[in-house]
Image (cartoon, helix red, strand yellow):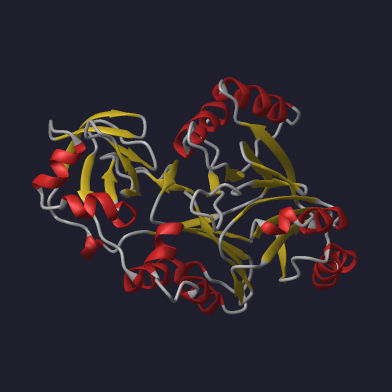
Length: 382
């Protein structure tokens, strides 16, 4: 059994005061069981002012997580907020790892993880995952490398993001240190029975017209129905103005045709030769459709996905794509507040995400790990 507790602080300048506020709320001496892990989401300036480090140093357990542009826990929601959820248990245990994403990231991830996994005869039941936001290595590439080493242990988590246009302070967190190019993992061992769900695009907002991916290079979409990405999009009525200004609200919905649910992909950029740089792998042979997202869709899909997960016990982790945040417009706390409303008395942690990590069941019910965009991913632990 895993018990959970949450705490938040808006104290961004006084490190000692922030640490005192968090420890007072969590009451570690009273609430901690044998093994504990802390999960943090925070505005990036908490790292710059030293508050993040002071809080982690004041807590007698490992902490992992990432920066974000908005977070929430137990109905406290804000941009300038640090939120922490602790998982504590007598019969589950936790390890943490910081994996530098080097040029030879596949080799380094395999070496670091193999060494860590080799220290125990037991395989972890879940990997809580915090990926860096990098131009050179995509989230899907990191996920694939981890999968190759672990044999497909379920991964759940987020990619770091921040409030800047260039995401220059988006970082992962490990024990008070923040990293630009390091993946951070929390390994959860024992009788853990996580439940997963995703809120993605409303099916009514996905075009019925389908296409086939005929060319790709990882996350670069090079061919659709034998045409370039730009040629295909223009052919189905996406104007050049939309292509130049509306990429952030143009979801591509990918059906892998293997029995898993479709996943959404963002288009980050279009190259001069007509290719699309996407937020995740674009496998040749998969079916592609165009979607739309607005505020009503964000709130509706979150409610539909989260409601069945909420119970009288446990904790819910929720990571929602920046594109959903942007679709909310001026009411940009609405999804976080909806999660808090639906959670009721259940502890929860919500944060905006640069990319979402969550497994989905295939046609036989076996979980397969996926990297998502335009999605709010949920994990309930109890």
